[in-house]
Image 1 (cartoon, chains in turn brown, orange, green, yellow):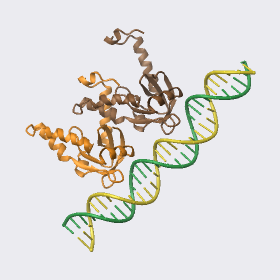
Image 2: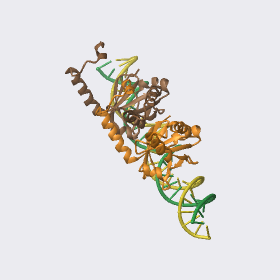
Image 3: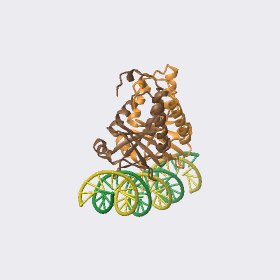
Image 4: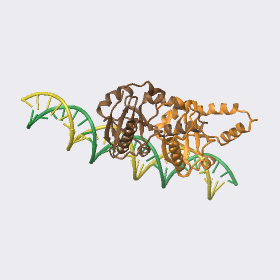
Length: 152
Length: 152
DNA sequence: TTATACTCGTTGCTCCACGAAACATAGTTT
DNA sequence: AAACTATGTTTCGTGGAGCAACGAGTATAA
């Protein structure tokens, strides 16, 4: 699956060129069809190959639109969701609302996260990483059940 | 199904041009026949393809007209419901009472929510989204059972 | 170590499709 | 019959998709 972080620049139309090393896999996996939406906790975008996205959509569909909290999640994730298809040059267009949400300007980071990518503005990404490292090294976390059994 | 938010302007007759990418699906799904009504929780409109609406109508019919809360829901949704058919140019007319309910003026947002669309005045939508994001990022929510297992 | 070839990322340009607004026609009501 | 409303048509402008070329960085070989 997808790993690694790449620095990429948007062109003046807001298009993002997928690194060559991911293109074959994406063509096979989903014919270049992907869905981009926002992360509900962080100022970054999430980019799913279509099959992966459909799983998410299923989950969202099962939420109750009468419950305000669940409705809010639906509104955010579905409202921002956009189909993004790779063009013949391996690029995809990021819609203006999404760019605005993640503060994307010129340089961004495309970060492989197994079944999806995260898309960060490069500056925001640098900051985020710095904070994460500081927190880990300070031992600033509460051990959850799942981390108990986690060995690297 | 339907996803993504699009900014659209009403023409001076109160007509709304459905984005081209939805038109084929809508033609196949319901021959352009849709039903528009109000949302009971938010100042926005709900736009259902006819088959989807018929499901809703069934559910509404099954509510008790003796229970004041259920009765009120029936009155609102059924009272405002209007048939909206796409014309030959992929546009549909929003009746004045509906426009008034959602404060629609010139610019609106058409938001795909799986089996239906939401229609918001653009300014109101911006505000709503800003609130939703703030609430999510602040961790300001009560975990429901369904959200416990929700992973993106 | 240096030179050459190739791949990949970036940018500029052109063409076409879609959306917005204005205009035109038909139908209805008083 | 006149005016108003609803529906259909046309035109224009903007923005997105495709195409091509340039440049930087890397690998390979002499």
